[in-house]
Length: 397
Image (tube, helix red, strand yellow):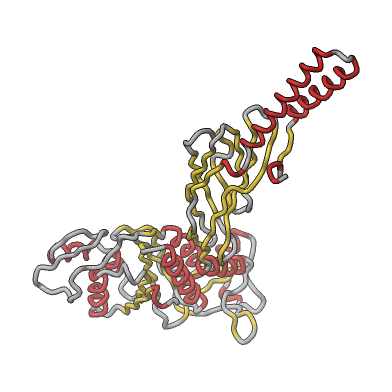
């Protein structure tokens, strides 16, 4: 009975069975020996064809080559390949078991030892371990029977921290869009903040002073808006994000640390800027303004995070001096001391300081890709009076 489990006879198969039964009944009613023998041969052929069709669609004739565990960040798309082969020629349709899974191609013809590579895309919505399953609907080449069963089941190691931080910021952005201040004070929502630097405008709330109304924007949109300013005596902060990481787990930690830091600074009323770079290439820059726009730019910045497992450090751990010095790093190559100095002038930090002098710099990166050029830049910036803070993913357990 297990051989027939899940088998469904298709319309073509039902027609063939009906013809066989009608022929047998007619041969018995007419007592025609020749017709009876023909019906018996027809019945034997139909039984053999159905037996072969059931055997071709059995789960035992399928072989799937799948990864045992797939690491994926919650809310991010992960792609991997699955190879499926079948000993017999069959038509196969792949149906994802979970709604977060998609597969391409959906319909293929399998036959022989050569398998088919399927591109599976998963985007898990929940944290913790999960599974990605593929169900197949198999039809034999004659179109007589059909069978469905699960052929692939891959364990997903879902990393949730980046998604939690992202949802936190999205809620803050949506609340700000409704005119609600991000920072609570004394058990109620703070209606206004007075400071030195203009950072943006928001909807007018009860309790706001009329002298802070943004008349130009209010006339244009036909709604009352008030101006917001950065906190007094607080220098602007630029959060510099090194986009290169050494693994998926480190990418999750880096995104979480960066988003939480920007969110905390914005809630504190600080003018926040965002600098996302990879090597010496600037992927995204947002000047120190703060407000909801800084949160939106922070969400864009984490999309550029890239896993670079070959990222390394400088071979010599001693500080940079006047003697010849060699770098061994995939993103910088092999350079001597003079080349290092020219590389430092091309670093995004140098261009940032030339443009903004009175800022605080917070450098967020994977601790395993922090090279000695950036360490030297930290010391150099501190000597000219720039407040530099280094935060690595090692701070997150």
